[in-house]
Image 1: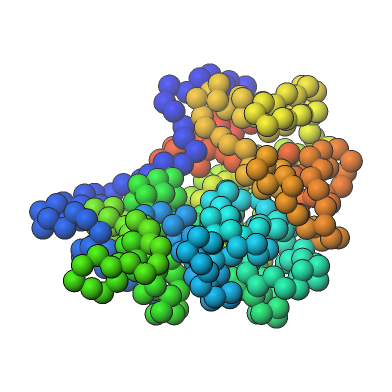
Image 2 (image 1 turned 90 degrees about the vertical axis):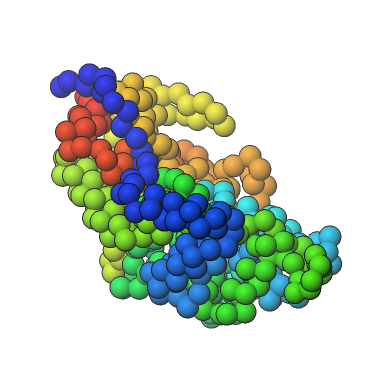
Length: 421
């Protein structure tokens, strides 16, 4: 089985441009609207709100900025405006997705909150609604939940929203990876009291940077726009009564985003074809593709797999390195990623759960059975009490670039199959 080195880098995910982006950037240049106001920003906000089935969108410098302003507004709504030297969530617990990128919950810390991590649901790889209910039993005073949708494959954010409503909590939906994905026909980003989407360089559509805060509340939208432009008051001089941020999207970046939006469905279709080609090409191996929940339609941003427990060779990881013992017929994410890299293809480990991160290891972590700690080798014992750690131990993301050819993907599949020899 040939696994010769590819003469061209096969990427995990890169921007796919079409030409309209340059037209709108040029329009910004020629009209001299190069700052944080202009027609491109206005149009991005209109399209983003329409796409996400929300009334309003606020165009910002990145999705993290959108999450931060959502967290800040939620904190002030729930607990009142804090002293200027304190965050809006000072000392308050917030339930957060565990298996995600840390940008999902870092804004909680920006505002003085204390993340409490909710374990992952095995059936969806997203926040576990059962564990969330357990968390509310343990901490009924918590009034804010921040939940992410992983790799463009949504869980049941609708169920999570109902749980939040039952307990009088607000929901911030981090749909950075899930733009265009749906749950029962409803767009991801539309379920939360606040939503956020990303236009980062490797997302389903891109602006090279940027994001939007999504809301149905005009007061939230207006407050976010004010905060994002340094919270300047309506006065003839620079008047400030609260802390603001330099978070507004550039009209030039907005031109790229504006040019990308018409191709969202095309990108999703091409990502789906990649997922299905992996599904067919890896058939018969002791691994599973990342799950698709009933009633959901993913955007297929990244194709990921998880190796069956009995097909895992021994693997150990510390905070920066990994070791494994090769065994006949078995493999592990480390070996597959090494072989992909040697082939000149980019894979990536699954998001390392937040409760396993050095900065958050002392934070509370709640599973279906109650509070727990990391069991990084849970798969060895054949259990999945700590689902996120188990998926991290056995899973990896595969090259999912739209511009990857069928021949290149077939070669990647051969590399993966060779790891089970």
